[in-house]
Structure formats: structure tokens, C-alpha cells
Image (cartoon, rainbow over all chains, first blue to last red; front, side, top):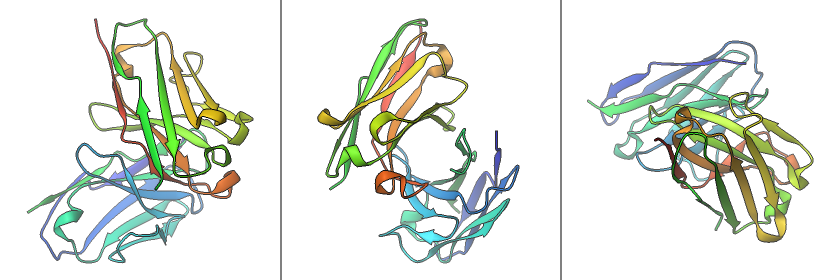
Length: 107
Length: 122
């Protein structure tokens, strides 16, 4: 199975900060990577797919990059509504797998 | 508006069974592949199962293969997960999710339901 390792697992930041979350795959997955945002009590919401394509309706302050085994999610200027938990997921190989999550909290 | 609504969760004893349902609306359900994912109390997300358009292709995670069965009824716009031989470690919120493109034109999943809680405990 492909392991996805997210770092950091916890991040404390302020409104306006630039935030970068990393997802490392245990083997190459090309660009078969998605990023999700989850708020308490809600389902995950797709932000980025194919490593760098912004899902319709998602603010442009979110961006993704990477391919192969190293991926990043960047929030260029953190807004109050962005405090949430973020997960990466690979969809290139079964079983589909998720990263352990990065919780972004207010400093 | 795309909607996925799960139901069927609840409290069940170890060894018991439950059948989860996911009713779709706002899109042509028969044209989309679907998956089930669960989220443990520790917030870990685990993919469980995939079913293609028409149900021709099905995949399961090792942790549920032989115990869980995914199916779909396109006439009822519904996805199902039959869960047998339930274990304490199956306790989680169960989500259904839709593949992003019709007829597997995308690898990714866009819409998720709100989830249904399954608790396995004696």
C-alpha cells in the first residue's frame, strides 16, 4: 500500500500567514493526488486535484504543487475560514490512501 | 444541487450487521462511480470500497474484504454498503463520495455526503 506522510501534523498560524503543508508518498504516484479541507462535523471538501488543479469555487489563495512523491498545499494568505484540518489522498493505486491530516489552528 | 445523503448507521454489537444507504440527487447517479470512506474517532480517513458505473468493477480495502459488500441501485439513485461481522474497530463515521467525472473521466472524487455514524460496542 502507498503510505502518505503529511507534515506538520499540527500548525499554529495567524490570519494573513502563508502556510505550506507537505505530503510525501512512499512511492511515485505521478499527479494522482488530491487535497481536502475538513471542518468539525462536516465532510471533507475537495480543494485541489491532480496535484495542482484548483477545484471550481475554491479561492485562489489555495494552490498545490508537486509530482512523483513530494507534494505541497499552500495557502497564500490564511483567512479565518481556513482554520481546519487538511488531508491529502492518492487515487492512482488501490487501496486508495489518505495522509494523517494537518490541523491548522489560530495562533 | 448535488446531494448525497447517508443513512443506516447506529449502535450494533460486535458480530452484528448493518446496511448503510447513500441516496443521490442533483445529478445522473447512474453515470458516476462511487466510493465509501470512513473516519475513525481519531480522525483517520480510510477508503473502504469502490463501485464503478453499472457495478462492473468493485474494489475493497483488505480490512473489510469478505465482510462488507458494496452495491448500487441506479433506479433508486442509491448506493449501499452491507456490513457483516462488525468489529469494535469498525466504529467510525461512514461517508459516500462521488467520482468527479461521468463514466470515470476523472480519477478524483468531488462531492461527499454528510456521513452516518456506526458504533460497534457491547
